[in-house]
Length: 441
Image (cartoon, rainbow, N blue to C red):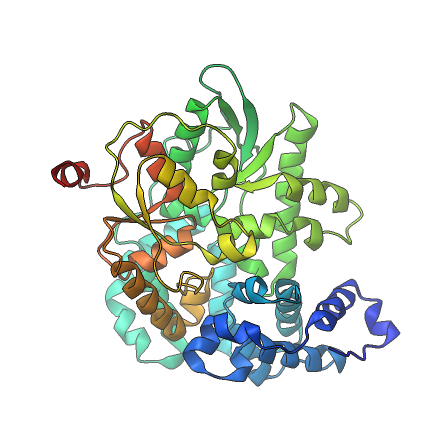
């Protein structure tokens, strides 16, 4: 793609990077076949190629974002399926991130939209505020229909419906900073503290800690870490996102400089995609560029790390039917596709792969709140494909996907690491035992 940015424009590192991305695009349109919004809506402007044209025009002419541009960029899930499909290696993620930042700085959204986005950016990255919000949502759930009747407030209705029916819980180990290896220490890793996942499902990190310490892995959760910044980053709110990134880099760097780390592990794949991009996000910050690049190089999804090691011997009967949902952030963002399925198969599960596994479930961070109609259609499509495989369990590696899919099916949805922990000696992640059904087959 030909571009015509001025030298003054290219002096800006973000614009220079966007120009590189634009020049890689050859207009082939392969991306349209795997873009969830284009598959649903059939609008060229709701495909990666169409959005690339909109972004190019906006950035090249250095013009403020319009309502039309904001609408089509907002509809992008950042699922990155287009990057998997693209034969030319177009790094669409960096381009759309720049576009969102530009929209946030140059476009004044309608009042209700601004307030809802500000609320999400303030509440979701804070465990304390998120716990309080869940309590409030439990009380307000009956009013979801009322909010649905007012178009501008439909995101609030979606928020209420996504909120769990039970109060937010705390992990028994919350606040603990070190988990020694059981037996000889074979590795030392840091585990992302996170924000939303420990509130919605603290059992995930508990399972990861149990499993890995049994495997001889020492785990640390350094003081000062927290939200990875992805939730605000994908809303175009770059300053708070970069502040989160710097805080995590500082926390992990102290461990790297101290006893050292073999890896930085993430159990939420959406966070992992962002952390692996810290080196890019902080590349122009002289105080953080080198450290951020080192952190990104050490970052791994928990399934990547476990796939490199011998798991404990399974202790449950083989044969449970598990439909594996490959989160977009894991398969497209991090290119981790086979490790989770191989781990599940190795521990005795029968792994089922639903049709259209490349298409997003509609979660995508805050997307299922801000774009509830499109997200609802994607969830219905995803759940239908999963249920056709007739699974007993659904496994995923991202809390957003788990929440989204779980809202559309009665089949239990658990994290991959919860199943691996259970299969090798940990407690069952299910309120109702599944093993009798296995024994009867």
